[in-house]
Image (cartoon, one colour):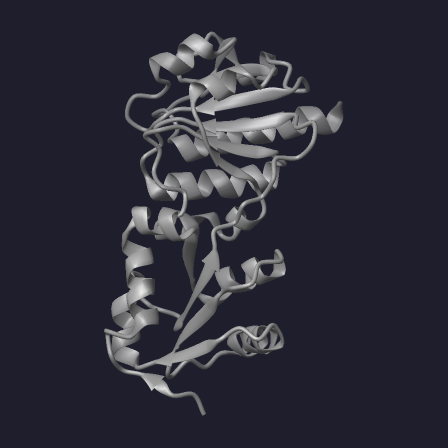
Length: 258
């Protein structure tokens, strides 16, 4: 029977609260918090091991039984937290009763990468999380994040990415580094001069996705070899996440049929 934590001054409870609320704390400690059985399960299946896990005292699900077996095999500390106190740590409407602290994933960029996704001033956590998830699905080699983009380890980004953080390298970088990539650089913008179907995506490529409000920045336009658009039959322009997904799957389609 696990001892139940009831004090908000407990050191683990305090650490989780700070990691969830402070990007500075996450950077300094190189830790992130995952919430929910599916996210934690995905991270474990990707080869990650949590430092420790907090569970709500009344947690009861088949998926938790599977995860708890894996955690015990890895000798991961499991700490039970009183229900009301646990719920104060969660920022979801219906907490699943599971929080896990993991080391921040640091995956290496593969040798001879052929597809980078550059994210420039995307500020919405849900959009960035969806972009990361689509990037994994489309075979992107690495995500490059520029200044002005939301913290990739923000809890809302982590939730929306559905485990992508543990499957793709994510690098905070700058324009000087991007100039050294040695690949064609393509910006995406509603006013781009070439549509996505007229570009040869089989070449090694870095795709730039701009922010929700202003699109491509001036620096992005200066560094891009070309700017592409998504042909549309009507309606407003797509948001950053949808645009990234459409273009990435056109890249995948061309490469698949090449």
